[in-house]
Length: 66
Figure (cartoon, rainbow, N blue to C red):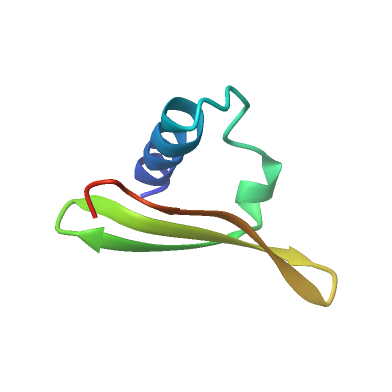
């Protein structure tokens, strides 16, 4: 499933928004990854990152096809 998440994040943030930055990082290992699917495809995604006693909201996206 992480492969599909990395694919949609790369499509949205690197390609569509033209942000040529490393999309995968060490925070992905500790993050909570929430997503919605439409049959085979991820249509929405949110990354929640633990931060001390709180959390940070990371990447949030909705696919064009959604």
